[in-house]
Amino acid sequence: MNTNNKLKIFNDPIYGFITIPNTLIFDLIAHKYFQRLRRISQMGLSYLVYPGAHHTRFHHALGCLHLMQNAVRILKFKGVVISEEEENGLYIAILLHDIGHGPFSHALEHSIVENISHEAISLKFMEALNIEFEGALDLAISMFKGAYGRQFFGQLISGQLDIDRSDYLKRDSFYTGVSEGNINSDRLISMMNVVDDELVIEEKGIYSIEKFLTARRLMYWQVYLHKTSLVAEQMITRILKRAKDLTHEGLNLEASSALRFFLNSDTLNEKFDASTLNQFSLLDDYDIMSALKSWQFHDDFVLSHLSTMLLNRTLLKIKFKNKPISDSKTEAMTQDIMSTHKLSKDEASYFVFKGQVKNLAYNQDQGGLTILFKNGTKKDIIKASDHLSLKALSKTVSKHYICYPKDIL
Image 1 (tube, rainbow, N blue to C red):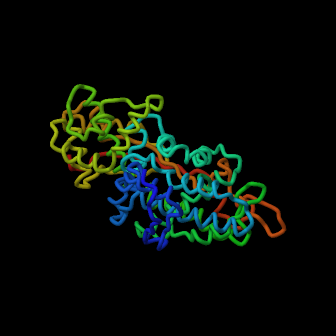
Image 2: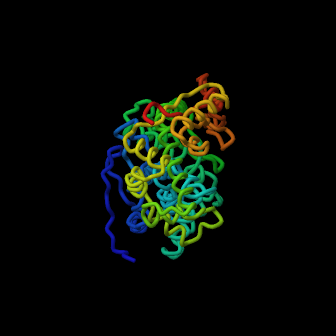
Image 3: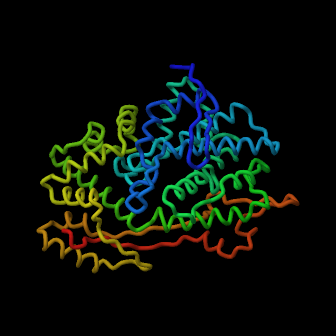
């Protein structure tokens, strides 16, 4: 292993210069597992709505590293004791927290592999790297799993106001041009403190928290759950499902070796061994797009039409409703496409389907956000704020949708 790397500086459009704190971090960034993140879109297929949203998980991970360095500096300045080993563990954990994402990030989660989250795959990558780096990731893995003794470390990595959210809201806002999500991450971090091993926000940062939670709600409706992004993600998931079904029927679809591996196997959590991890590390957005370009000419009606539609952005129609959509409406549309194109009910279900999305900006069940007042008392943000809309942000809002063909078929 090369241990003579110089410390590097990345030029980031959000924060300016991002420094690499030590050679171990550099070696992790230079590793092929991490370099793969350059080929994983941060926002899946959202570029079909926002043309500028082509940033990657690589960008996001570096941004998180930068913000974590700022957070450590602020907390140490305020008297919070953080050892050099703990500091490095935080940097590694936040740098690698998303390394387990598959192609198009969340779009194909639970699709290429079943019943295993990207967080679980991230942990498998970290454990594999820990062997290669001779135990240097032990502390980072403990922090990532929430098993380390100091609670606030886990809150910084994964919590209601973690470093992950602090970067992706600001970064996704920048690349989409949706200004509602442009939070002041520097201000939020500067207001952080630790009391009784709990991450808290000082009283004067309460309005920044209100802006953060509001921005999160708006970004979900306007960007992450945008109806066009949603239907595109549903379509690419169904394309892969169809490809798997055809492969299991004995058809040999053109695909990269890594993608073919997952088309041929039902990769469950308990089957996700070192060999599977290696195959997953070879998989990225390019495998999927290359396959779609080939599959658009396939003889199978479902596979070819869905692939062509997605490549040319002639997507299915999608409508949001506040109430559940009746089965009779879905059935009528299904029957219509069955008779028009001589499809089976199973084949038609790829083009007509319904579902539900939920938006919860603030989940008190996941630890909450604590405000520290000048007199030393602590309150949850909902009780501390005089902003009436915050109570609404702690309630789940659900919307129902139905997808069906336009006249393109």
